[in-house]
Length: 256
Image (cartoon, rainbow, N blue to C red):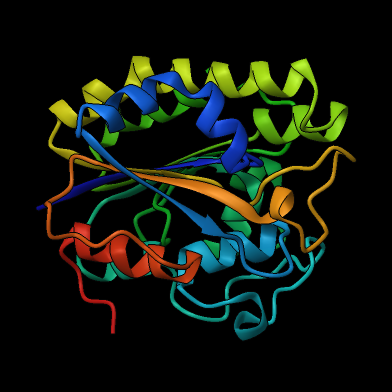
């Protein structure tokens, strides 16, 4: 069966990615990765776009248009489809992913550590602090990968978004968070590829100089997308709503 590591770098704008993610740039220049840029759906907020990335539906189609709308996705998620196909699933991710895919509202004592084959995300390490260190998040993902050998693994970090909200996209702190994420990928991605996995790296939304991403601006909406280790005939997405069907194709599971 095919494997996929889906990396979601929260708050990573396309301009910062193009300038500060030198490892991914090297892969792209060497034709070892394919790269494009996408325009985030409206509104460019985290929870609505998580739902889009996991269901292939726009925020208006899911009805999840606010970060405060804590409920399961109203359509089958990529994780639910993978489990229905008999695949093993895991996620090291912000707790809103647990709410969208598994159960809402998130209860830390019950839901932070997940090990339940009956749930769409069967194996999860979910965090609820925006300042949770990216390095720890990537270690969480590796722990899940070594223990469960999932076919679908979500790696969802908040460090870039946290730095952007604290200091704005024009700040040194934001740039350093982008560089740190690139370094974490440089340390992790070769092992993922060696395990036979394809890798998606993208973001939900960007960040502007006002330390926000609420507006319909290029800074808030333009995001990067990389595809690594995938068959050459796998198409790059044109819209964020294309990413979930692409992920299903890479996993070899039906989408329609």
